[in-house]
Image (tube, rainbow, N blue to C red; front, side, top):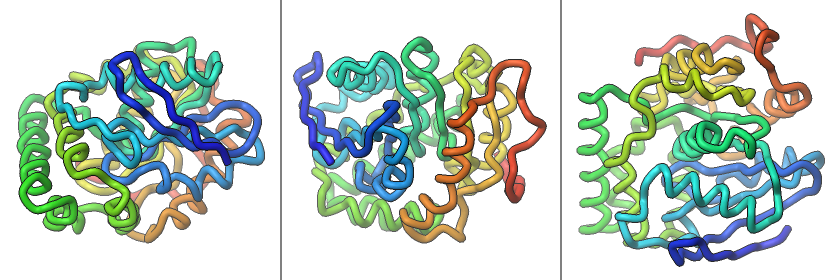
Length: 283
């Protein structure tokens, strides 16, 4: 296991952990946890891949307290900066929640750098009304953190997420900088995509794991998978049966390994992915 620190063009110091050897796979955590939430999954992939586990800007060791530095374009630039720093021409990108949105944005902006993509829950694609609600949600979260700390910020909302999310968030709190977490919530004011239809331009082979909570709805994952020209819906959902990061890793690692053996290409999409079909959720 190697620990790497590097500076970005805007003088932010970011940190990443690397395990394994082989084809590069950047595995990005959700908003709230840090890279350690992805370690159990990385360990199940490290026999074939060099798994790169960044602490995304704002989280864990990658402290950034300026809210103006949180945009989707900046997160995308951070990924490319990381690949360039490591001398990696292209990689598989995978991410949960926040990390899944960064994966999509990077695949859209730099298709030559993204060999395949894995989305563990899809979020941040809303109409205008829902986007306004997200801004209010994240602003309120940031206000609670600023006033009373990170635990107080999460306390009223964690019950709305699957148990595995709560476990990951709580584990990361002692390693998180409150002012950085407040600043990171400013990403809510940026727009990742205006509609799911914009995903039609992303040709990267993509495996989509559906979420089951209101911020990562099953129906959105299904729509994204059907809109992406080379998208596949994984028949394993991120639901209440998953309690820990180990549970998540055990549940999704086999499907990821199988997908990456032969990512779906245009004109060859299978009708469905093996495994139990997730319950259909409301958008």
